[in-house]
Length: 435
Image (tube, rainbow, N blue to C red; front, top):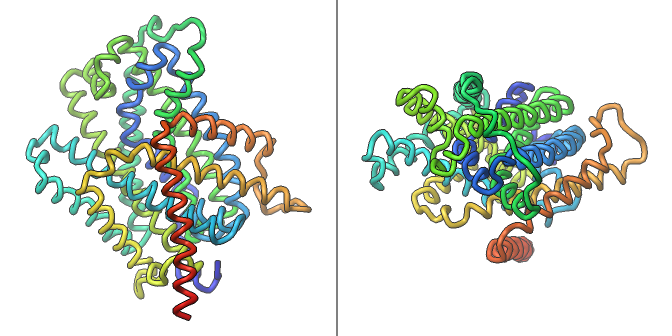
């Protein structure tokens, strides 16, 4: 990536901003539903799925951390894959990520916000009210994103602090209500059940790697990016595991009857109707936080591909005053609004997981390639301990989870990737004809 073009972005973020974005994205809507869904599959042994997914993401975090310390450019997972395997792989990874993951996830999150709001105000069940809410939430983060990443992070930090504090408080108060009988289990679950539960649960862990996409705006990115990302993942794993243990320990078999709102039922058990209402408010804050982080960070992936010449130049043009990729931000805002309003994402959400896993595999392969090509170790690079072992485990685990997908989802993912390859060569052909 050209350093001259990169200079337009201001290096204003530190390690706490990386940690905040990891927590903001990963601790989202999924954690409010998944304890009951995982319990329905694994019963009392549900914690195994959390530990497995946590281990996978810790291994990924160490490998991603090493790669991020090698590459300081904006773009995160896209730029890692592009630098390792060239423009074609980069083009596919770029669109697969900001559209196949980012836009679909944002569409889902906007609708989740409207669903939560409708539980308080039924008017949000109507299309007009939902569209108004979508526009308001998008308008706020779009304005802040254009004004500057520092301004956006003030909102994200505030929302993240509120939701993490509320969830930690729920864990602390909930432990006194735990019945040890609900946590005891005998024997191991079937392997396919663990895979099914992990496929569901991994969706909750996804997205934290987006925090690495702003390396061009980090102070001391070679240290800040890997350290912040790894600390963030550890925080996510601790929150998820402790929260599930409390939910399962308090509700036990009642989780089966409360699959739509297990955390709300936990809060109601502890604090009555007041607790139920508070957890709904916290869930709104949590989803808003996740949406805001994803929206802000995915614009940098679009920006990076434009700087590299893989996407139209307009997406890398910076605001003359604020130094932000204004056209890319506006483009994504319109796309998110259209996609959220259409509701079509509801049938494609599983593809978010599929697309993420494909990109993760690409980064792990890049991790291996950079290590193999390196003849002398650099003091400036963070090296993952037992890197080859961790990378191999993560690769095998991701492949195992990926093939838990149904044949229709696998086919759809393959068609999407092949379409992107075709689009890449078509764009090259058009450029040659124009020139």
